[in-house]
Image (tube, rainbow, N blue to C red; front, side, top):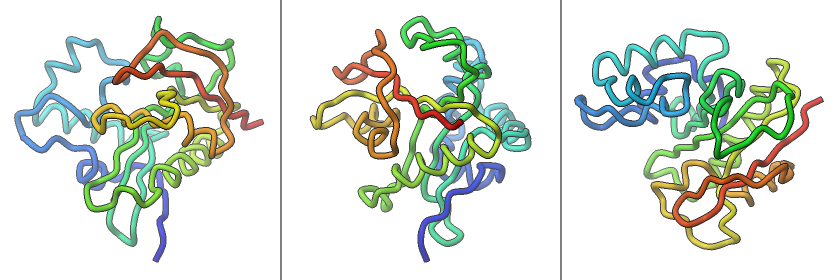
Length: 191
């Protein structure tokens, strides 16, 4: 049937891909880089955490995109205007310029669907999602792992190679490091 990438505006589908496994959890749901204080992010537990994500799914734009295999949601990419994320004030990941760019910062592929190129589909879908909403450019902050293995828990930011394959170019270095690998700013002009 093929993979289709759609806006993440159906809460149950978002929850199926990035929802926490334990009802008492205060992690995931991709809230860490939203404009929430660290204290608020850590304190949000169920059902308040789900309620916050449900609100995001109802907003325009929704919080990201989902990859579907038929009707099954199998992957996620967080994408949003940088100004509405913590990247707007992040000291370790600098602004390249004052352009009102969008950011794509998190990928998640459900077990059983990995190693099938879904991250490439998700990134392409995130680019189209941002373009359709008037973004002048889109940035990602992947690890520059130079082909080395990346710890799966830290691979959520993507790799430089994935962004390069989608036409992104390195725009700057950062002071951020994940799993021993430096992160870089990759940018794609959408004008």
